[in-house]
Length: 302
Image 1 (cartoon, rainbow, N blue to C red):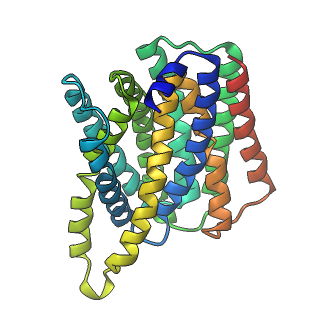
Image 2: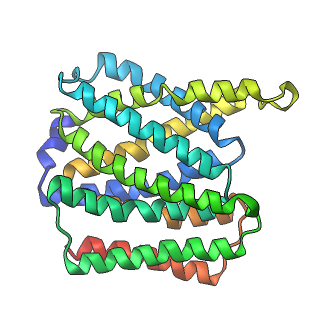
Image 3: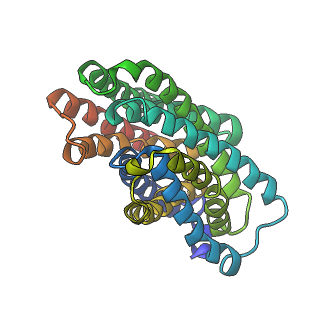
């Protein structure tokens, strides 16, 4: 599998695979975000997910994939810091604002700065048509956020703080997208980066979640077994979601993959409507279509 993926780098076939991987990541990332915002406290849910994907990754990291090259350890350390800050900020935003407001702002801020980061780090240049596509996509994403902001009734008193945290979280989305792209390109075997990333990345949030769980009054604490079962599901989704976007950034342009992934906002709105029972009207449908149209323009305008 590794040799086949590496052979696709920089080829038309690799570009097609990268597109499919980015769209898969978009769908799965929306499901992942809804799980963190859903039934359980976002901090506890994230801790359950992380401990499970660390345990799943461990045997592959130690016994299956090639051992990381020496220069990879500082890269893993940087990824750990960036992702930990991202997850803390995201959990803080989710505890203060409605999912359909916070999520579009996070995902809308991310691709713009990811495109700029890809230009600075990898020398990627978007055409004028692609920049128009980015503008259309961002108009849809931020339009969706503004619409939700006007109509949402949940957590109104903490919504301004949630939006500020969402913007900062979006900056960290761009940072980890470009940094992870650099990391997965720095090792010979992409699965070495993926397995060790998930192992190392899963070490912090479970500790934070355990402390938060113990601080909850005993009668109000959620049962551990259902939380961990959802954590296993979330871990599997995370493997395919984050793994897909990381592989996409190795196979093709980082900026294009980052923009395509943000079609996750469309999936998030559908999840908010179908699962979380949040209202969706014709205006939001139009805005979701703008997001999808922007992604198409970016993909075919290169």
